[in-house]
Image (tube, rainbow, N blue to C red; front, side):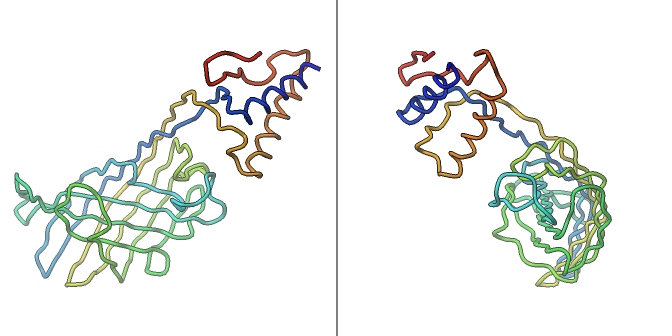
Length: 249
């Protein structure tokens, strides 16, 4: 009987605007790409010394606009880098605008786990360009063709999508390609690592009335399983809290 009462309170409180205590897990990305290579425009070559791009978009698995969850089947693996260039004498200007090169390499048909993949124009897409902006953007990047290279994946867990925790992913890549205006990029050595962490915080649950019918069905099955797994009235359901802060028992 008490189980039925709790279910009633849960449903009534959700529909009437009451909130329950929920936990939301936030992924804190820790993704880096370290690269060495060259950038050439019209016969003038600049170098990319061993440098690290450490931003959350350095490594992305799956489609950014796709559903939350592990990628199903083959997916895209995107690597991004933004590096300061050095001239033929190994020098870099001390003041802006500082020359930089940016690239975005998207490898198609990647599966979880270790892999050895040869890169060409049919297997990967490369955008690159030189830009003085210190922030990565694809606006000034151009398509490059004649891609050749290799991707060696040491570890890539199934959970490493863009919105799921990826605690351990590693790979090495090298590639070269040519672009418009007699431009050429050659990344002779690059490695990426992913060591995400998570933070959990308490948030207010959404009212059931705000959820779609499939979402309500998922919630119903979840709490049905939770309530059915307890007996004797112990630990049944979450603690409910009204909008005024009073507790419902």
